Length: 396
Image (cartoon, rainbow, N blue to C red; front, side, top):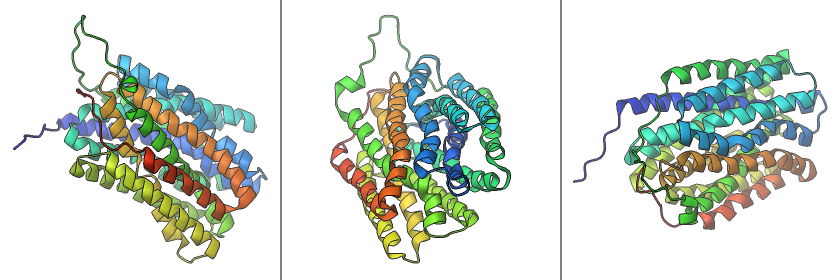
């Protein structure tokens, strides 16, 4: 019987702090999306323009993810995460006092660039501390960070914005990122790395070894499209299209994101049980295509259970992230994990940045049902790109 490597007790503490760091960054990145109802319905900003403003944080992420990952590969994760979140808090402070949408968008861009540190390095901390047979579970928990961050933003930002304005709503990410930056600086311990002698050969570039990482990046980017369609325009769909009040609509979005967060843990545990990351990833892609078509049918027929279908669709479309992140880190190995995870996030957030204005324009042109159908094409295209078997670096 094979003896499984024990999980260090410190690993769970690093997981908790890694989740907290990613949640804080996500609250900042997604907060602008929940300003869309105020901007569009009360201030007359078009959906395409509001989507572009909401996408500014994602554009910022794209600019710096790989750089933050490379820095984590070189100096470790602790100060990369702490410094990045501190800079995010400063950008949030600038956004609170910004005058005009252009300056507001600039601070969103800068804050997104700073918050990328948590995306690139927190996953590296988690994978570095956990043995292989626990990584699916650990990364599933870590990947709860994004829907949990969206949940916090969904239940706070639109309500505060409608009652007290944009500046008051942005105090949420400001306070959150500032506090978590201090916690990370105190608590995080960089995971142990394999010792390398002065004569050791340079680590092999995993991007040259095979097409595995490129294919995972492509699959993840495609699966981001339906995910960010729902996270960006789900609230305004419920309010403007279905006639929901903002408060229950925001609560439903938050509930859907929370259920999706728990679902990521389940999918991660499943990958540990079946001994594969790519097989469950393929199952998620198939399911995402199905639920987007169901959502289109719900809108077109005004089916009464629209809220239930929305929750299911949201949960399914966020389920892939932990699988892909774990697979990328295992293939990249210790020396390349930061850069590979940075590249993984770059593809996802570049797609997300495009998704905001793209889907905003599509909704205005063809309506929600057909937009949901178009979004279903992305997971269909991702299915044949999923690698047929897992690949892992010799040492992680």
